[in-house]
Each structure stands twice: as structure tokens, then as C-alpha cells.
Length: 81
View (cartoon, rainbow, N blue to C red):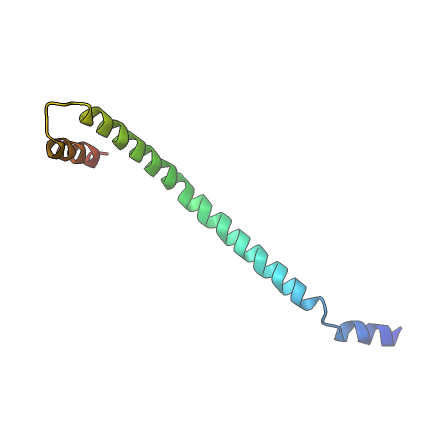
């Protein structure tokens, strides 16, 4: 029994596996933390972009102004978001 215990203590076959499991768990935990902190602002930015595109479509539908005038109007309206 003493020989089995000393052989078991000297065996390092599973040590690399444990290292990789701990490293992977750390990476996954860090990824979840980053996504939790960035996720809300990403959704808000997407909503702002959608609103700007809607305003741009409404402005560009007017035919009585030049393209440059329409783009200046889009820049002014989207800067308010």
C-alpha cells in the first residue's frame, strides 16, 4: 500500500489536464464578464444606428434637395442621437 501511495504521488499524468481545465474556466469566466459589461451598450448603439438609418431614409426620400444637402441634414439629425 505504501508503494501505491508513493507511486500515486509521483505520477503527474493528470496535472496538465487540470491546468488546461483551470485555464479554460478562467477564459470562459472572463469572456462572460466582458459580455455582461458590454452587452447593454451594444444594444443601445444598435438602436441608435437604426434610428439614424430611419431618419436618413426619410430625408433622402425628398427629391427637392441635392445629395450634399440631404447628407448635411442627415449628419445634423443623427448628431442629436
